Image (cartoon, rainbow, N blue to C red; front, side):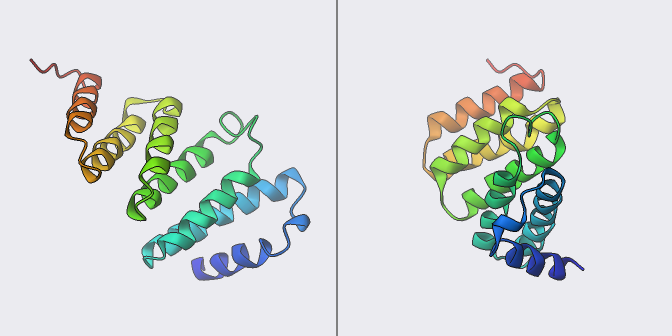
Length: 145
């Protein structure tokens, strides 16, 4: 099950030299994603974030947003949430900008826009929160005076 995936992900990262083939690296990134979801459900946010970072590192940075778009987007979006939960606001903002830039559809932009507002509220940036909310509403076709 998912717990077994978590243990597999942790053990495989103890010997990263064994994960060099492209197909194995992609599969390992997928295992990390599933293990990170398991950790999130167990409120193990630091473990989830570490698994996601390692999973993203396993993907080829030159092709991750083309050949493995769905996996890269899902991992980045979940890592953004983990960074916010852990209080890593700068990392969260960087990842929010990345997911917004990489989002292909309006639906995919909603969560990053909400995350942008949430992190700005967390750091008491009310002007930034209002600006982020305005961007979200504009994207949805709602114009504010």
